[in-house]
Amino acid sequence: MSDFRQKGLFDFRKESRDTTITIEELRKEAEACQKCNLGYSRLQAVVGEGQFPADLMFVGEGPGEQEDKEGRPFVGRAGELLTYSLNKLGIDRGSVWISNVVKCRAFEKVGTKKVNRPPKSEEIKACAPILQKEMELVSPRIIIALGSPSASSLLGKAFSTITQDRGKWFSYKGIKVIPTFHPAYVLRQKGKGYDRSFELFLADLEEAKKALTQKEDKTWDLPLFKKSDD
Ligand code: URA
Image 1 (cartoon, rainbow, N blue to C red):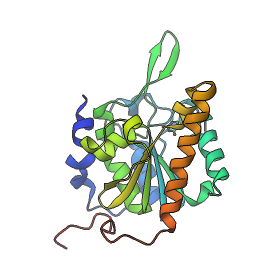
Image 2 (cartoon, rainbow, N blue to C red):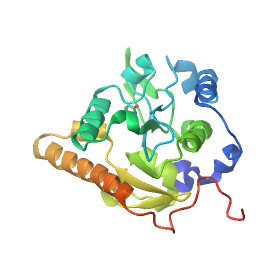
Image 3 (cartoon, rainbow, N blue to C red):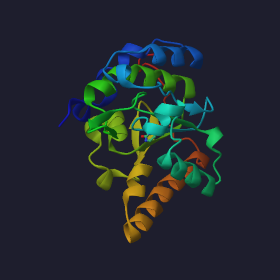
């Protein structure tokens, strides 16, 4: 098991707690970042986009080929499915924040082809301060973790597998987190498998939307980054 799966972001979140930063500064920081190898092979660093602050924040895995080219998150096929799903639920893509655990494309060379791969724990760790700062800017009430690397990095050991834990509520620093399938996973399913996974994916998004309309539960209502002794 990789170490981020065991520890989640909790072990290193303190480093970025005290920073107040603008989105422009954050983009510059990401563009200049070479804390891991991905910073040397990317075309562009892809920071989140959308509205901030926002009630809903999506956290995916990392940019793919199209995102790397365009410098925007979720603009390839997985992004099309995400946007389609948001529209279906009456959620404007521009009203939420869409981001990723890592900001640079992770790939391996197979012959001459670049094939996407999940980010490694050291890459996730190197990128964590940027995600933390995005969370500060966005201050979401609910995070939808798209896929296992995202849910694991946020929730650590509390999260088991997507099959077991999708659609369940978790807490990350007082923010409600609901893991669901990554849209790319849904797209890889065939026939009835596709229908079923898409149905569950939509149901999880709907559940998040419904939770936004519910009255704040005080046990969840801890302001982001507020220290417990404040
Ligand atoms: N997959 C992701 O996890 N993020 C993107 O931005 C695109 C595809």
